[in-house]
Amino acid sequence: MKLSGLSLLLVINSATCWSLKADTLPPLEAWQGQSEQLIQSAASSWVTPAELTKLTDSPDYAATMAYVHKLVASSDMLELEQFGTSAQGRAIFVVKASKQLAKMAQNTKRPLLLVQAGIHSGEIDGKDAGLMLLRDIVHGDKQALLENVDLLFVPIFSVDGHERRSAYSRMNQRGPSIQGWRATAQNLNLNRDYSKADAPEMQAMLQLINKYDPDLYLDIHVTDGEDYQYDITYGFNHASAAISVNSASWLTKLYRPTIDQALQQAGHVPGPLVFGIDSQDFAKGLSGWTATPRYSNGYGDVRHLPTILVENHSLKPYKQRVLGTYTLLEATLGLLDQQGKALMLAKQADQHARPKRMVLSYTDNTNPVLINFKGISYQTASSEYSGATYVKWTGEPTLYANLPVYWQNVVERDIAIPTAYWLPPQQQEVIQRLRIHGIKFDVINKAQKISAQQLTVTDYHFAKEPFESRLTITDAEFSREQSLHSIEQGWVRVSTDQPLGRLAVALLEPTAPDSFFKWGFMLGLFQRTEYFEPYAIEPLIDRLLEQQPKLKQQFAEALAENSALKADPRARYDWFYQKLPYYDQQFLKYPILIEL
Image (cartoon, rainbow, N blue to C red; front, side, top):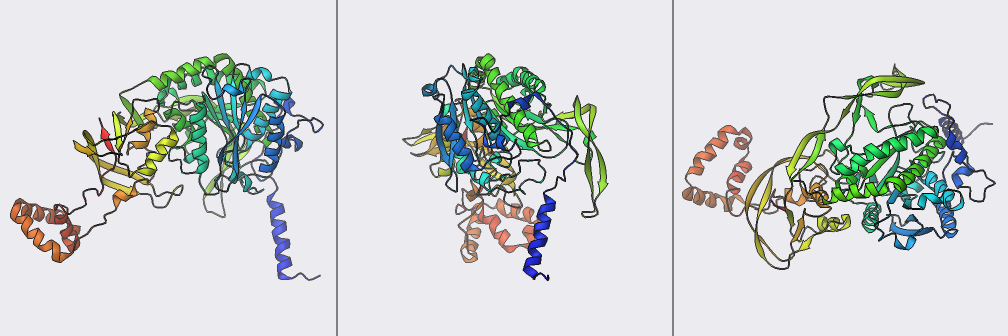
């Protein structure tokens, strides 16, 4: 039978899709672990939707929430709260789990764990692990996990991304069979949005954090990149490069040893959160990352909320990753039962600290730490398609002995912490974001004069293309002038003498890597809106030179030094225009004053 053009195309497309479903990823080690005993069979009354697929797939939003509603209704230890709405109108829920539910928002004596799944919804391991654990707490033998600890569990954070489901979402990842999308419906990456808080989902999450003030925050991801033996890696800003040094010390000395041991006993291989320096030559070493406040772990560090970024390994099967996440969550609750009070004290110490200086950014240490890294061997191959070489992982375990790790813990930029920042009332977007972050400020009710620094941009560069729906400033230099300023009613004063004072610095200090300025909240300062005509400025230049004769010599020197000025008549006019009182005095002025 002869096929029409359309029919032939459909057959070709069908065959192509079928072939793409085959596993083309690197070879895989066989795995068995004690944690496999956690899986319930289809005969169980409370088997989760993912378990029905033997942990090869993950349910959609409707099926997930149907199970959640059923589970919550079955236990007086669980309560469901909608804390936000996505851009497409989907409800975002948190499951509250406690033996003292009524006191969760006010209870300062019980450690509170916040677990977040699906910030990147193709990386949904945490959702299915969390549902299994909640089930075992309320209908199994693990109620003791909530004896002295409370839990907040967000099964799906990026709910719109979760519903952009496809078998072809993440080509670098083994399962689930159908995966959500990395970004939200507004094409925002929520794990780049903590500081700027543009997405409605992120604004809701920050308000949830403000409401419940958790003591530990777990953000569950799946990583890409190199192959290695570890099936679960996790990290946090290390004490050597942390703003919340007491919390970082607790995570280093108590959390990691305890969790690693629990994972190993369950048959998993935990590892540090590190990244290869050279994708073509893994043996060159690793980079140890210090996150900035756009990321969950960097944001948690700067607001004194101990935060762990969990990265399951994308090349490991979905079942293995989910069970590793379950084990990590269970062990975390167990540790908080034993050592949660110590973490709460460490967190309080960080909140009460008032250092004189603050590091804004770090760079790599050139003196590496040597570790034995459980890697996978690889070969370098040439591509006939790209013309370049690429790495082919063999699936064979190999130990990289004494592999160098270059931790990002050398101070690159730091500042003396100001006493306060002063914002004019027209900075409504910035003021509103401060409110969402939970930063306290005072609204001035009468005019006054203050001595403060005014910053002027002297050099700057914009990014070549938008990033996360914003035109960002990649770098900028400033001059700083201390002087008296008139403050009118309605101005806002943000004191740094508060628990979130370091977060205020990270957002309002324009040289900070994730400041509102760098994210492009104040692009208006780069725009001049009043100009001149030659017939008006010519006589004004004559009068200016009469009053300031030295300007004529300065102008001649400027012409001699600047060929662009010499060649551009308008630029020459502009040289004089900047000396006149008609010039826009707000042009390139950072609109926030800094009180030292």
